[in-house]
Image 1 (cartoon, rainbow, N blue to C red):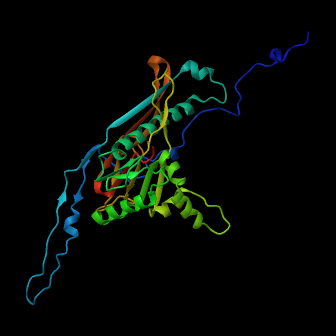
Image 2 (cartoon, one colour):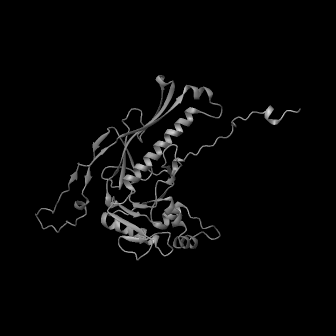
Image 3 (cartoon, rainbow, N blue to C red):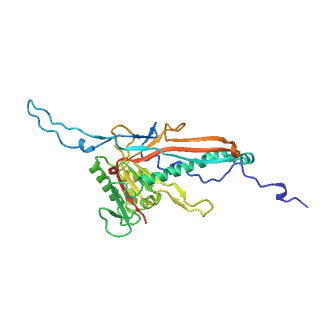
Length: 329
């Protein structure tokens, strides 16, 4: 009897491939939309200025030998931040380490696991702080039918909607009330898909293309079309099912969009819609408030890989944002 293939070959993991669904860091926007401020203390105060004092016309004619007209300004030091500590760990039992075959690498895989958990938590907190109803001075609600007005607009998956005009109105509204034109547009992936397929967007890109070239719809192109510097598309996904249940995957960003002014960098007397205060003073943390440690857990015969992060995502100027709620069906 001749030996069969099963007699001479035992199945084993291939060393040159592995399968893991790991989300790229660029799928997440929480650390890219607003400036990050590394702070040495977990909690503290910051100053805000009332722009009304700076924008009044109070200069007057001056008669000989008289005082010039004058005024002052106020500052408010009551706003505060607080950077709570979030943490997650994964344990590597000695038995798992001893039995891991190439290309498995428990330390690398554990680091990826805890980092993914941190990215998802940070993104979800960003949505809670900046990407929800009733946070900004102006909220526009998308509707499936009806006429546009000051608070509702047709959803952008409707060919009769006017997304370019809607964003332009938002830019003008914020500019008139704050003196700063929004420079950033953030949207969920579903909104992006509807926007790039909208006939108004397609036509403007198509007729504005370089002769002989394809009409490419990129984030940079849409940013130029909308009159902003940056467009961010939220593509990060969360599984909301508990362990053991059927997976339920959904985009974290939902079906909304945020038009806002984000300062290119933090600074004194520098307005911005939001900040992230990252506790760099937390022992071993980066300027984003993160740290990953590996240490021995002799009690359970395991090595622990643990991530901590301490930060506060703070909405600091509600009038520098213009929110579009549920802009696709």
